[in-house]
Image (cartoon, rainbow, N blue to C red; front, side, top):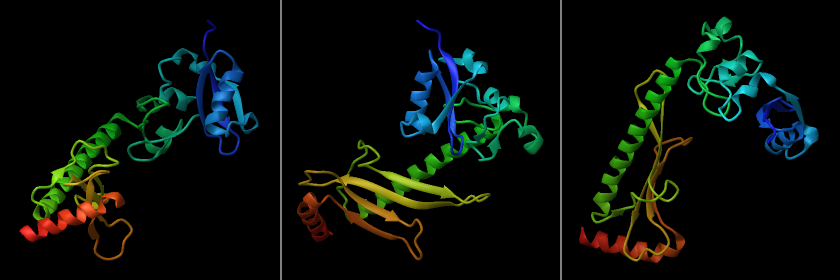
Length: 225
C-alpha cells in the first residue's frame, strides 16, 4: 500500500479548501474538486503539503496549519485565527485549539466559555419547551407529548442571548403531542417571533391528513372544560 501524502487543495476564487491525504495528487485533487469545485478539476489547485504528512489519519492541528499560512474563524468568539494571532490579539499561535476538520478556537479559555455558553443555551431551550408544555396541558390536559420523536417531528426551541446580557430571547418554540385518531404525525403548538414586528403569534398545527381527527379532539376537549 502506498503511503498517504498530504495535499493542499484550494478553489481558485476565494482560495478556500482543505488538506487531503492521498497516495497520489490526482486522487486528492478529485476529492477536493468534488468538495470545492463542483467536480471540476479546472476550478481548483492542488499542491503538496509535506509539513502535514505526519498527521495522516490523525487530523491536522489548526495551530500547525496556521503556521503554514492557513486561517480559520474562531468557533467561540469569531475572530480570525492565523499566524498573526499574537500580534493582532495578543494570543499565542501555539495556544490555538482544534483540528482542521473540526471546531477551532483561538485559545483554551475561549473553548471553555463556548462550551459553558452552549450548556446554558440547552438549559434555556429545555426550560422553554417545558413552559410551553404547560400551556398545551392547560388546553389539552391529556396531551401525549412526543418526547421520543426526532427534532424534525418533535419538540424544538431556538433561543438567543444578546451580547453582555443575561436575557434569553425565545425566537421559536415548538411542542409536539399525539392525539386520538392521529395517523400521520404529532400536532404542534408553536410560537415564532424571529424577525417579526409586534407580539409573537402562537397557534396549533397538524398534518393535513390528520386535520379532521385533531379538530374533533380539540372540540371534545373544549366541551369537557
